[in-house]
Image (cartoon, one colour):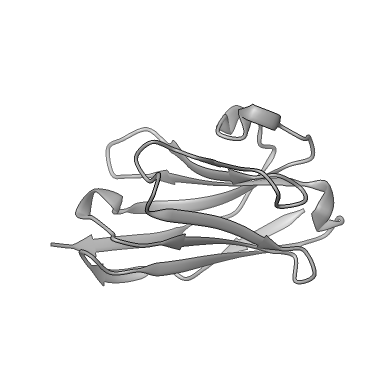
Length: 125
């Protein structure tokens, strides 16, 4: 599967962004999808994950309550809606896919086999 993330940009603190990630290749519904981010000088961290059906989700502690992950299987696209953005949210955001149903491990980046190229989000104070 090939993944193409987009929607990044410069936004003021308190603002919102919606990041789409379009998938192509194998059937989208066979993949658990996740969003991860990497800030300058920091390790990559988990942001959110969503099951194949979209019924179950996972959120990292740093974004819980401010972000929503969703997927449109008809459009082969996963979304990350980010609200109340903070300067600490500045990072490159990556979408990823796993052919496995990860259950409670949707936040484990080591279990994702396919990665998009990333989209940069900058939050100004």
